Amino acid sequence: MRALALRLYGAQLRYPAGQEVHTAASGRIAALHELFLEIEDREAHLTGVGEVRANIAFITGTPEDEVQPGIVSLCRRLDLTDSAAFAISFDHLRLDAPKICCALVDNAVCDLAARRHQQCVAAYLGGNWRADGVACNNCVFWGSDADMQANLARYVALGFSKIKLRVGLGTLDDDLRRLSWIRSTYGRALTLSIDANGAWSADQALFAIDRMRQFDIEYVEQPTAKGDWSALDRVTGACELLVMIDEGLQDDADVALVCANQGRIAAHLKIAKAGGVSKLMEIGRMFDRHGVSYVVGQMNEGAIATAVAVHAAMALSPRIGELYGALGIVSDAASGVVYKRGRVFVPAGPGLGVTLRRDKARLLWCSDDE
Image (cartoon, rainbow, N blue to C red; front, side, top):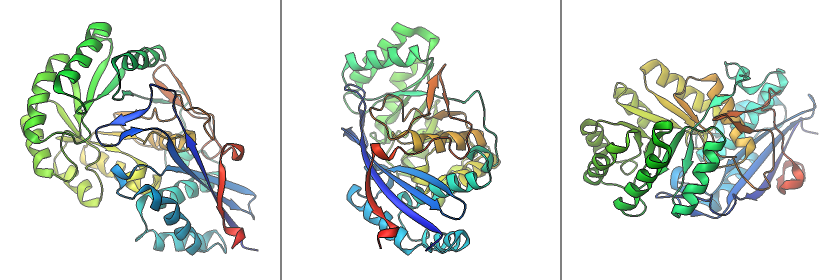
């Protein structure tokens, strides 16, 4: 019998009505298509788990219906003889596999490795678990004004004081009205930022940002289309606000361009884009060396994916965590991630401190069946 066994599960996770994900890049997302991978080490009697969201082609470039087959294809080629052979095969195979597929394996590997070392993931990554959690912002997605107001009231009640508003979906007047309502209702108690998710041209971005400055905006995220570095450079050079890149931060070349900007561009790190938590840590440390301000964030996803991002944030030095992804999900496949006082908390461990509830997910594939 092979020393390692792999099991892939799936689940559809949802938020309550009115809290759905809706951005200029994603459109409206009715449900989060989550995939979970368990790696069982039979010799150590330990299991590590990872989670990724499949329906995020707008940021990874991998179509939703190709994610599960890509993961199974990658897993079938991994050497399950023992942990050393597994690591060697993964290091080789991840070079040409989709990053979202690699991220799932890498996250599960990290959880398992931390459990082997009897550490929490934050410590395994070179940091420390923090009893005070990680400072976190929250996001108001596109939707009705009534939904915006209800969601904001819920976030403020949980202690969130840093709020990001999604813009660029309706008219500029819509965005200005929403910002005006937030400021008139909450005054300066909230720190506001905006995220256009690449919806604007450089001209549109500069015009909109100029109109929005009256609301004391901290930063603008992804004002122009991903990949259009000339537009982003133009906005960065002409705009008085801090500009942050998200969808446009896709590969090592983009990371190098951000580093070369000498801190003029901030960055939004996500495991799904990086290809796993180990790669996210590598990028974060590179940004630390080059003086780049960054957010450790995540996609909207469940508690297991949220937990690994929180542990990574504990091991890095982000300006803030954007780690609200598991907040409010109905029937999540794991628990243990807690939001209060504007912060996110995870159990001390070992590993991620959270485990998969198999009764909340459906088994899709198992290496033992082949």
